[in-house]
Image 1 (tube, rainbow, N blue to C red):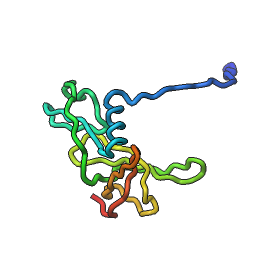
Image 2: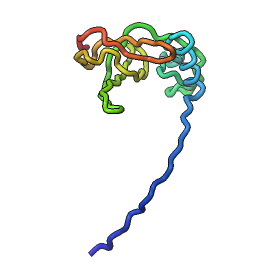
Image 3: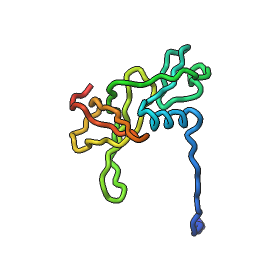
Image 4: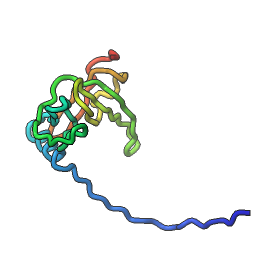
Length: 138
């Protein structure tokens, strides 16, 4: 008969500090200052990264070119969370021709959400929010 192993009892206090990094800091400063959604672009690989990065993951070249991401995006995924017992919907928006995307609360989450729906990224006071524009799927 196997010997019963007692588990450790108690708690561990965890503390962490998150840094957005050089590219992330510039991204959030620009978002707060002008409301613009900025990405980095690798000219050698013809790839635009959102969120922005310092180095291209394909060629490892330094990414010094910053471009504004405009236009509608599409809802790639979403989930319902319940902070403080109140449901909130968080969505992942992706843009055509851009590697990656942005996560944000969906403003009009009472709409029937469909993957592929067109969404707009709204920015105000350095915050992002998604707004569903139509109910069509891609």
